[in-house]
Length: 360
Ligand SMILES: Cc1cc2nc3c(=O)[nH]c(=O)nc-3n(C[C@H](O)[C@H](O)[C@H](O)COP(=O)(O)OP(=O)(O)OC[C@H]3O[C@@H](n4cnc5c(N)ncnc54)[C@H](O)[C@@H]3O)c2cc1C
Ligand code: FES
Image 1 (cartoon, helix red, strand yellow):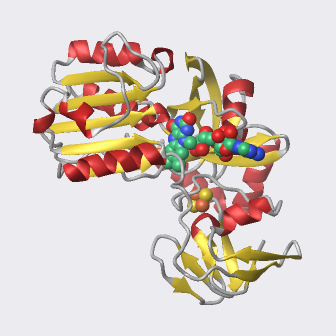
Image 2 (tube, helix red, strand yellow):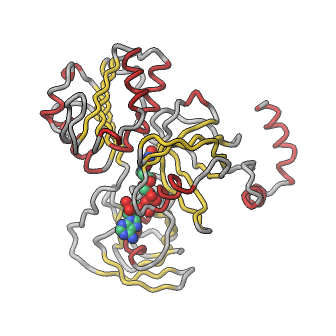
Image 3 (cartoon, helix red, strand yellow):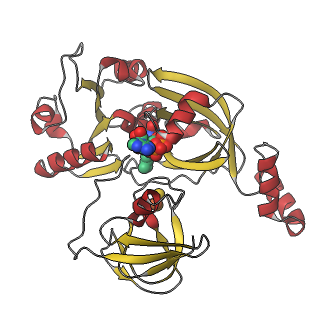
């Protein structure tokens, strides 16, 4: 089939303009496309009062994913294409049927849309899956999974994958939610634990006691109470940036290797450089701004009323890239200043280091 498809594509490729093909496919509301990956919503299921799982069927441009990865999801909301990153919660074995699980954030543009408005039959666009919080090969003897809130989504994909393979290593999941009713996949997690003695699940609430009487925020003391915790040789953590930072500090203290992923950006760090303002010119919109060198450009452009597409706000998804035509910016990751003309920068992790001109 793949060979035929490649042969067929090769034959008609010279006659097709892929961008135009995909544009018209989008206008017609079909999921067929030459290069882009569109997906049809097959079902929408409530997981908990604030969370929905969407099952999607992607078109043939979907190349599969590895458990633990996320992808950019684009929806048309009030005539605008909005993109956010979502982890894939299903097992990769399901092929082009994939699931994403979304927690509604009050006032959140995309999560409100996906939880309140989206219906079976609607269409979304998917980006290429990416992310590094992947199950190691070979598996460690004992893996500790630390999840908070929506941070469970990449981990349920990994747990489903491990369960399908007979749970080859010992796995302990510690999963935090505010209250008992907020837990996602609780029934499935308990059932996997019943069927696989080397999988342990601890559901922990931060705002009320639960049946297992485990409650409280992540702490060194709470981890110490878990049976067999001293045997753990690798940890994963996923959740808000505050949760992931706390997990990182605890794991460092225990000398435990950690792979982590934060769903919210860290609190903006102010730089050590002297506070100053620079001229920022947006060439296509012909807008002149004065922006500080202390905060990422994306944040300041939004405050100035300039709408810029974004996904992760942490420099990983490339949605906010734009060309810096001239001037210099500081990259938040490397701390390096770049003043090469016509460079592509990520606005969410770049700050002005001189007067700049952007292709916006
Ligand atoms: C790698 C990665 C994986 C992720 N995976 C998942 C996942 O599996 N499931 C999941 O649910 N989420 C996931 N997220 C988070 C997701 O990408 C979105 O950030 C989340 O759904 C919120 O997007 P939104 O458009 O609803 O909120 P946005 O509109 O971006 O707003 C973000 C926050 O700001 C607040 N806000 C917005 N506008 C205003 C305003 N004017 N005044 C005050 N506050 C305001 C909102 O209430 C909201 O809390 C992931 C993020 C990353 C980076
Ligand atoms: S929003 Fe993802 S890289 Fe900037």
